[in-house]
Image 1 (cartoon, rainbow, N blue to C red):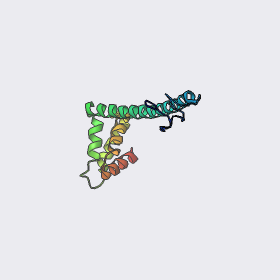
Image 2: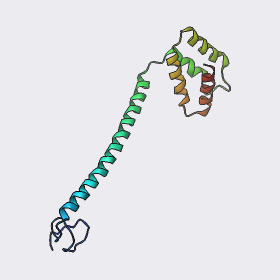
Image 3: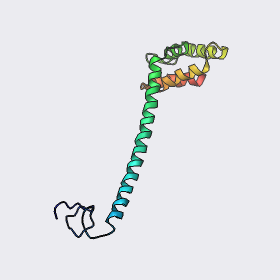
Image 4: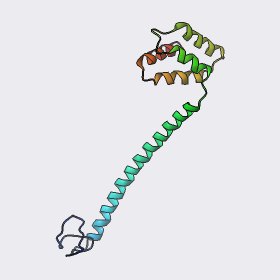
Length: 136
C-alpha cells in the first residue's frame, strides 16, 4: 500500500500502523511510544541542563580568577609553593602563619590561595601547599 507508515518498521498493511493497518490500538500504541520517548528525552535534557549549569559555574569561577587582583596572601603562598623550591620554605611558611595570626592577612584569602595551589597540575607544588596547610 503506497504511503503506508508502520510504527514497527514493517511494510505489512495488516501490521499496526499510524496511517494504515486494521488494529484499533495503533493510536494508543503511538501515544505510549511517544510518551516513553518524551520521558527519555526529558531525562536526557535534565542531565544536559545539569552538566551545563556545572560547566557555567566552573567557567564563572575561572573568570573570577582571571580578573582577580592578586593579594598579599596570593603572592606569599605562590612564593612558598614555587615549583623551583627543593623543600618547603619553613621561614616563609612561618611568616604566613604569623601574618594570619596577627590579622595582617585574612585567613579566608590565605586558604583560597592555598586551595589554588592544591589544584595545581604539578605534584611538587601540591606537596609544598600541603606542608604550608599543615602549619596553618
